[in-house]
Image 1 (cartoon, one colour):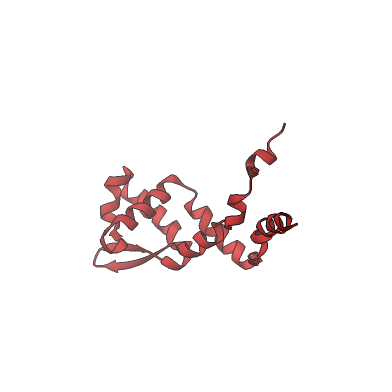
Image 2: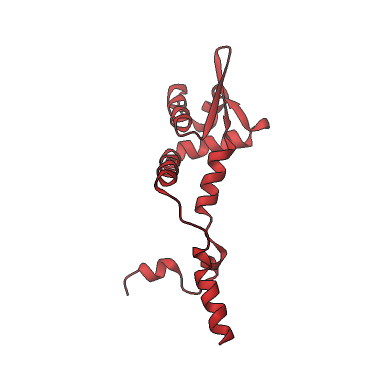
Length: 129
């Protein structure tokens, strides 16, 4: 009986936190759409790796092997999604990561430990036999 209770607790632990609401889902989906591009993922990574987690657009073009207008477009998508903040300094724009939306994405995508401990693989359950 004790083992059955432990299995039920492990199974149901995933449902202890409330699911996200519609507004939260829409906000997270917009951020995920913005990040669903290899160039934008690299931009986030490049900015995070810079001192102070901020970078001038002029310093990002060489690392991506993209033109400055293309890099600026990708940064604008990240800005519109709230993932980066922009500060104009003279003729150059500097971008820094915004921690709040990245933390929200991380929290929303963090699977409860009970799900990761479950024995059957979630992907194998969906695969045809």
